[in-house]
Image 1 (tube, rainbow, N blue to C red):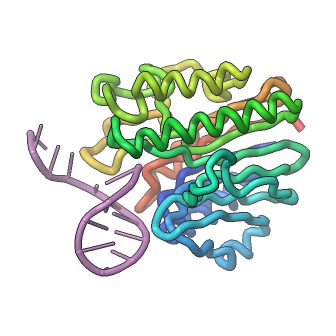
Image 2: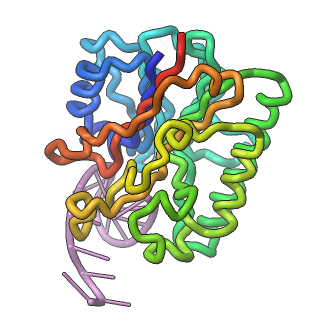
Length: 254
DNA sequence: ATGGTCGTGTGACGA
């Protein structure tokens, strides 16, 4: 089973790219982030044969799931704050596996209220994942985590000092997730440096491979035992008018 | 180099 995560930076602007990706890579499941609109253009994808489920919001955020298998939605928002209206979370059972798609808050500028929200969101996520662990529900979580886990996950660590994606509190919150017993699927497979999932549109970042690894798959132990491969597919980042992120793909034994 | 580039929705704001 092949599962992909991809921050598309607007579903309206990237509809053709998503269709091209589905048709050529044929993932079982595609999780996307940053829809940037309230309405999800599901009619545009009818020809692909994929089922879809989306949680949208006007202008910002938004997440959706495409699947060849039935999507049994468990939650469309993260527990822990009833006032939180931001569209950043989908939890669903697909092909016998609990799958979570997240768009974790960016948190800049830090420190400040946006960073406080990020850390609170990460603590809420920790509580949810701990519940799944305590209940012995195997799961896979993918998405744009907006976390550069370590120095080797960015081209120029000095550029990221103090940034919400690289601060000590962010690293501690990410390690707290990992310490539930989760496996960073990409790092379990590929230990080489200079492997990134995001390159800024500005200053020739893509051409200079000045990137960061912030899109991840974390696997609970039972799913980690089924891990066969994990790779970053750089092709879509080279397409015309691309997203600033590229897809990350994980293969789980059937 | 104190800018640079996108997307939303039409003026800033977010990334």
